[in-house]
Amino acid sequence: MSSYPSTDDCYRIMREEGLSTAVIRHCCVVNLVAVEIARRCDADLELVNAASLLHDIGRSSTHSVNHVVESVRIAREHDLPDELVNCIGRHIASGFTSEEAEALGLPEGDYMPVTLEDKVVNFADNLVSDRSIRTVAQAAERMRAKGFELTAARMLAIGDEIAKLCGEDIDALLERAKLREAAAARCDKLA
Image (cartoon, rainbow, N blue to C red; front, side, top):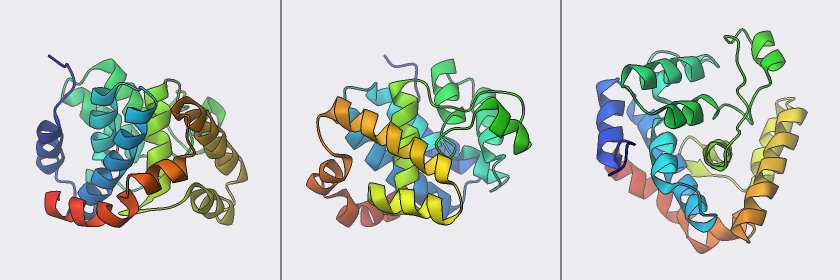
């Protein structure tokens, strides 16, 4: 039996915490992408499933960069396993070093994805805009357009690492799974 919350439990937690329908839909699409990638690269599916659904739980109280801190706090309040809490805490941007976190006013810590599961959830979140799935190039260009060149480079490096583990280009993997066409409709039903 898994120590991670089930999909139904994750949706229950999101609703209990008062997440908006829009954020729940976003988390659902991130989940579809993350789980598809995780299946292909032998990541811990149960961890990726729960982390990708709950990564933005802190958006129930703030939509600022501090939502990651709130997400971790809420996850701890629910007594979720440390691996899950850590994965949730490392989903932001393409990770922040302790220096970058300090400059952003985040509490001391390292927000860089470490484990494969951290990287899968982080990368999937970067590919999803609201409830649509971008290509890897589109996601990187969006970051660059906002002036986040280093973040874009990190995201691309994470994507390359994941693609090697999957043995397949991520855009091709998502295209084959037909997630871009189906994600919004599937997640509208669940939110």
